[in-house]
Length: 139
Image (cartoon, rainbow, N blue to C red; front, side, top):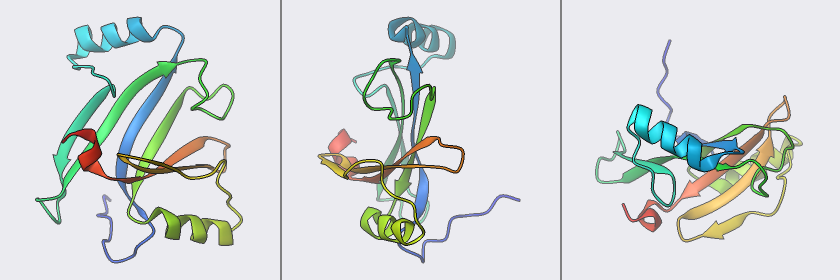
């Protein structure tokens, strides 16, 4: 059964912000996805714009990007992909997680397009949490 995300509880995931792949051949991967699947790859990879279901005036986006296999963005050695989850209140969510024994892997980063934190799931996969400022992506 598919369930809609409740808009009533702050400090929660609201959707998928991005999918990031690691590759030792970024240009070849980008060319393959572009030629075979028609992705138009730009400076942020591919940014898929959309409108919020509850508030159609609110812009949203989901990013897809291939990154160099050797990079500092992925903190878990050998992890080949990372999911970025959009959250509505990063500070509150991190407080809730900390109370449950889940620590951020490094300090929160603030950028023009939002704030980011990183945690591990029970299998040790790095997860990125993003409180977006969609206007920073030029949408």
